[in-house]
Image 1 (cartoon, rainbow, N blue to C red):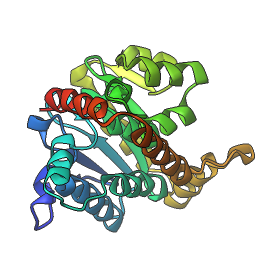
Image 2 (image 1 turned 180 degrees about the horizontal axis):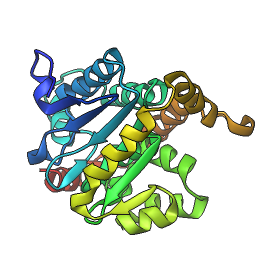
Image 3 (image 1 turned 45 degrees about the vertical axis):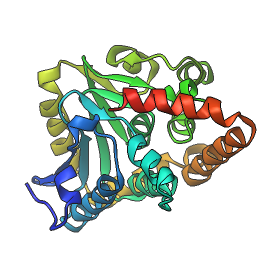
Length: 263
């Protein structure tokens, strides 16, 4: 296990293998919600994987969670204490780092994936999920648009299925995610990491330039180039408009509900 020297490396662990890396979000007591340190840790882990020449990166979580998105408690505390923070910008850098990384990313979804966690699945090149995994966009339940997972699922899914996730806030399990095309395979829980590693080893044996160029080509196939950064910025703008028009008391109570669920 390779880690950096700072506290962020405890929250995000990197295991370098032969040709690929396993990056694990390690904050199970918070459902792997990404606070500032964890977001920084992810970016550092991506850099370590690239420096090590990893051709494939497996991204996974710990315990019963894959990732529950932004750490809402930290964000709420920042606002209460007047601390300047911009988790939205951090998240754009994370998802863009995945899309711009030379390695092929495989999301190994071991458990719950909410909001930004669902976005990590969509921006990964391939995705596997265990039978106990589930995916949801809960933001509408607290008066917000899923500004990362919304645009990302719109790129991945048919319109009605993306709308279902955004409007209903209901969870879909791994088998449904596979049927919808949000993931490639749903496998037994104890087979998830072995299957991901077997796939990573197979892909890592291919020419690295061919892999990187093919990744770029898939984002621009048939002239339908995916402008990920603009899509995520537009998602943030939607929430800015919502906050400007919705009663503050309504938003506060909704965030409080979400905070309780996320602790």
